[in-house]
Image (cartoon, rainbow, N blue to C red; front, side, top):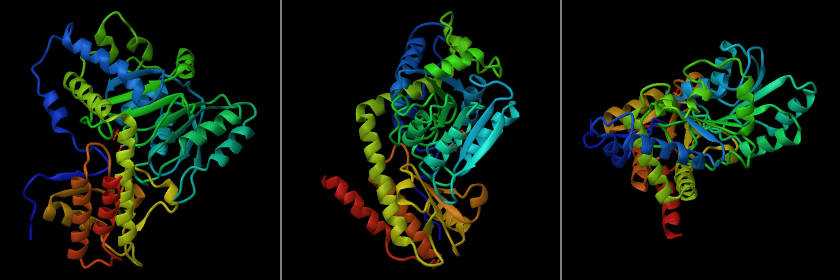
Amino acid sequence: MKLNRGRMLTSMPGPSVIPERVLSAMHTAMPNIYEGALIDTSVSVFDELPAIAKTSGRAFMAISNGHGAWEMALTNTLCRGDHVLVLESGRFAIGWGNQANVLGAEIEVLNAPARGAIDPQAVEERLRADTDHKIKAVLAVQVDTASGVWNDIAEIGRVIRASGHPALFMVDCIASLGCVEYRMDDWSVDVTVGGSQKGLMVPPGLGIVWAGEKAMSAHKRADMRTPYWDWTARQSNDAHYLRYCGTAPIQHIYAMRTALDMITEEGLEAVWARHAVFADAVRAAVEAWSAPGGLEFNIIDPAHRSDSTTTVLTGSIDAERLCRVCEDGAGLTLGIGLGDFAGRAFRIGHMGHLNPTMVLGTLATIEAALGAMDAPVGSSGATAAARVVSDALKS
Ligand SMILES: Cc1ncc(COP(=O)(O)O)c(C=O)c1O
């Protein structure tokens, strides 16, 4: 039976739910693109974006998705033939690394242990062994949206510093900014990559890159630079349109302005704390459901399960059917398993504009779908999650 009337809910790990306020801000007639309110709004967004990554560096924004932001980060800082160390822990760091390779870098991959996070000690050992400083950049992802892992960027930054290695540290925070604690400057990150469509609550279409001082120095030497992504042109004060290398993404600028206002009103630290509660609720549910032959966490160490996305292995349960029952029967869209996880996992996104109704609704719906499939489950995940929310509401 199909019960999927009412408002559909997306609980994929991005694109995430867009707040009505953000959608309304986009509903605007075309303004003057050369002067006035649009330019003022755009400048205010550029000025405030560094606070989201906790950096005194500079933010660049392009009309692109996350892949474009990756390319902006690489082409502005690297030279052809540079050796790049890719810290892989799922699917996305290697995607970024492969892009670097196509652009002319040599890549070396350091894999996290299966179903685990990057080992900072292994990074330190590799960098200390690189005595002639062949490695020019280290690429990592804070939250890998395929595996659901959270990597300890603070600790990786610390070991890079401790090793005295001069490589640039570049971090993909596409699935974690605006969800999970992140401190670019304190953690010695030189380049941060983000996208509009997850924790930042804006539709896909804005790629954002934050560059610190060391990255801006590397930019002067970089020979991978191309006209569209080039930071030098995008810093120009001659005409505002150069910041976007052409026509500005007008409606996205208004959306981003409103999303930044919403984050400021709540407080970035409060946003992180809210995400931590919802992540605990999701984890309590998965823990309760877990059963031999049934569901289990992909990431084994609880300390490395991310606060923005959870990847659940489905064992003997048909993952695709579970997603289908949730969507077609109940109006809930979950994330499917990506890459190697296809058909044997589903993902719950708990990022962005969420309240307990949405998170508990998602979990209770998954539980109902599991029940409809006569899937083996331990105990009630919805009840366990509600307990986490009760405790948070009490505090
Ligand atoms: C961690 C991470 N990096 C990069 C990307 C790629 O972003 P996009 O699909 O916007 O190009 C994604 C997309 O899901 C992601 O989750």
